[in-house]
Image (tube, rainbow, N blue to C red; front, side, top):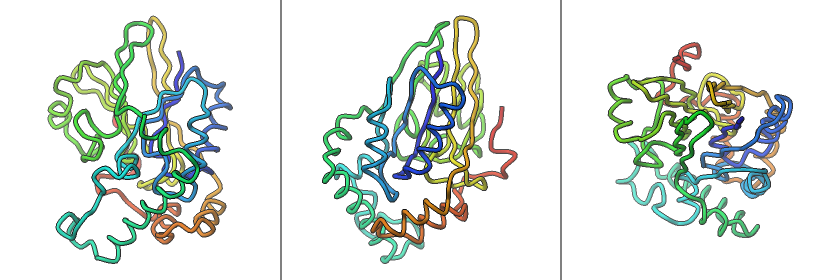
Length: 264
């Protein structure tokens, strides 16, 4: 059994096409697992949702940005909800970006499809390997999630009662491969919006049979200039942020030095 695991596509259809091409170049997969944050924030939200919906043998869950698109608990309601230092102007840009993305996916008829997505899935692979797929963590779709700076003690607390051998997640955009006790935690990184020193799209391929299993992170270069052009042509409200992210200038607060991102 062979699965491609993707997360945090964020409306970047150019990056997604590059990843799907890379998957084909690796011999294809039996299943696609897509772990949320499909449409917002990016220049082609409806295009990405259409591509995901067309994937064969796909298991798709929703992330926090799907919840925002559905009008459930918007990310920022008042200045009191904002992070320290977040300006009123930036709050307006965030609100506008989700309103814009909601308008695009609604106009394309995809909002009901998004609303029907589950929050997680579980399955047992050949050999009895139990997998649990979530967007951020076992208890939330928008907490700090699984990231490289967490200690084993912190991870063990997050995994309490997980009832799985492998947890796969996204949300932080930070690739991670760690074992704590008997549980393996895999963060597959981000396809569409890197927040690390490596600006390439990131995903993972998992292989399992009756005897063993293996997972590999893969990073895929794509046409960043074309992606920047798509942002400028899209009408997306916060073009500066997205273009900076495409250039690899944005850093997640929990990112480590690049050679330390994957901790076996």
